[in-house]
Length: 215
Ligand SMILES: Nc1ncnc2c1ncn2[C@@H]1O[C@H](COP(=O)(O)OP(=O)(O)OP(=O)(O)O)[C@@H](O)[C@H]1O
Ligand SMILES: [Mg+2]
Image (cartoon, rainbow, N blue to C red; front, side):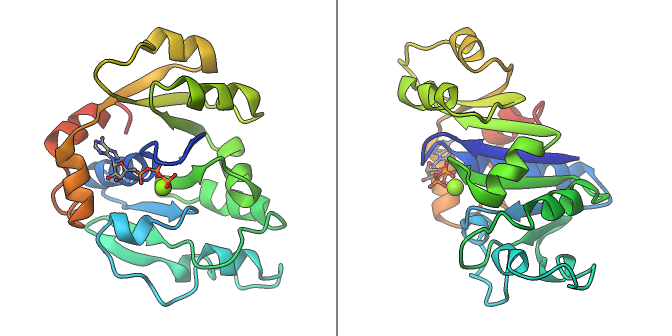
């Protein structure tokens, strides 16, 4: 199962939601889970050192004659049951994006992909073709109008809820044409855990609860 997370606006919480979904799935899936990072913050959000090894961007520049296990050899262990496929450096060329999408989609493990904000190139291919294409958004008119204007349509939505916003869950569903599957509270404990590199080891309970049904 391929779960692609993306947003229409930077700073929406996509990386935190993608990493948290992967961590929650890893808790209950004995076969392990893969977090594929197309946005670049994967190591940092999991409290890992920046890998020196190549990542997905490098793999996308290779030709069709690359060994079949080349992509899986780029994975690094993140925490119990979770491996990270780092982004690496350079552009995410779209030429081999369909092959990447096929490889991730046929993985026997659940695969969560952080496609970043306004995905383009390979990230757009993955976000458009994933079984679950999850828009992560604030209840924000400026973010939602971008979703409507773009061609990418989510299959579901995770909303970061903030006190005092005017747009409701129903407004968001009407606007983007997909159901809201989770409302995640904006909670300073989450930001603190991320800043301290402790999200993976101490996933805040409120965040785990808010995302439980989405994982
Ligand atoms: N539920 C939450 N409660 C409080 N803070 C949060 C929450 N989710 C994310 N944050 C904080 O908001 C900031 C942006 O989060 P994140 O990096 O996940 O967004 P993003 O959409 O991936 O951003 P970018 O577009 O830069 O990739 C970070 O400082 C993060 O710690
Ligand atoms: Mg991000």
